[in-house]
Image (tube, rainbow, N blue to C red; front, side):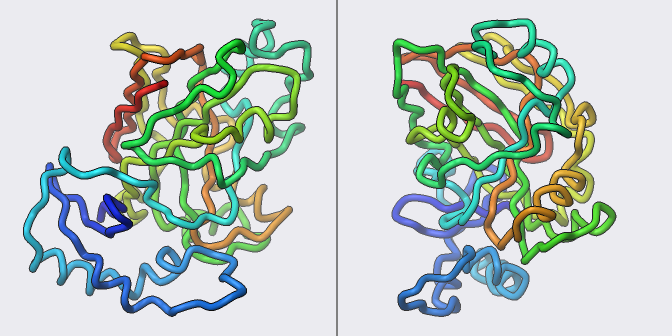
Length: 283
């Protein structure tokens, strides 16, 4: 199942080049008063809602996919967790290039651990990345994103993938500098998520997915998730050992080698096998 959010917070199923509006299923979600829940209600309820979503899709008229505005497929993540230098060749290029490391200590992932990004940085596939500091180097970083489906507290690696609701394509946009990662990577629009969520039953093994990112038609990044130093399951185990992951939390799994700068006017195309592709403009 491919689940998207589109236009004015409508919910849709993507089939081929069409979107089928299943928004009435949202009426089944609990209505919350202050304080708001500590998770994304739709992602938490997804297993129970899927039969009704399929039924509604069968009754809906198709909408052209290229005619809708795609929002982030998860509306309310409470955490965006990210893995630094999780591909060996990216670790090597970061150490070798002073315009990437800026004199900071680039530790391997097992020593560096994970970091958090501000949820306010999240945008969808139809939004633009807006360069916050044009005088600085601003880099693209394509990543596989795992979307947590249920409460995960100190889970073990062998069970970790059962906690994943689905997968999406991410861009972990980055301002290069000396500041902490959580600051340089949390600018508004610097966490792209899309174009939709592919549920985990359609992607039972995320360990060998081909990915590619181009800028203005030029291939910049190209690899497979088989080259991850710590795979999705290991990252969930590590993250949940420090803090409880909740439904809707996003796990950006790391970027491969080939990171490079973008500027206003550029167009990025990111694609991951089994998920799809998205085109993001920079301004």
